[in-house]
Image 1 (cartoon, rainbow, N blue to C red):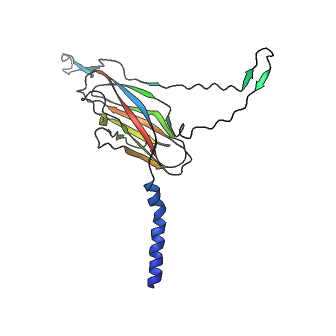
Image 2: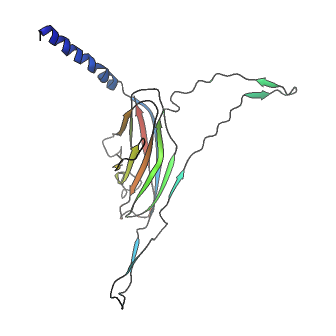
Image 3: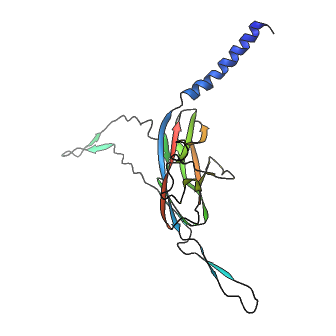
Length: 230
């Protein structure tokens, strides 16, 4: 291979890598939303042991839930749109045609969720999985973007760290395991990369809430933050 051909091949390889390098260079934050996660912690399961049965000599244990039963409730904000295309003139009561050209805000639907607040009820010392607790949608014409997430802070109260709540983000079918949320305030002010994708995508987010048995009964909350970059 001649020196000229070798130099041409090297130059071609460098040019082929330039679009990727330039693409990564101009990635910046475009939009950010938050979903409030509220965890109602009930007292731990109480174990009541009865005296040995005289006939069998065995020990029987019963489990009683000292608190509310496990259940999951969701709260969603509703949006109502009032579209008026006709005005009625006073006096003549004739329809007056109104024409308007509306330009949508390109950032209004860039990143959104179908839930603004999610509530999870769980007993201390227990773990609960909430399948598809909420959806997060990136809606843009960009063919390349990054979606990152994380909790803004730990759950209120130092005995309940944010890393004890995991999330499973998926487009179609659930992943086999979940990963704990990164906590922005604890993890060097960094978010975790959820996915690198393009155009409109909707992610289903399942939550896995594991509460240490040492956490006192009460209500704890934090915010799951989602940020899109391109």
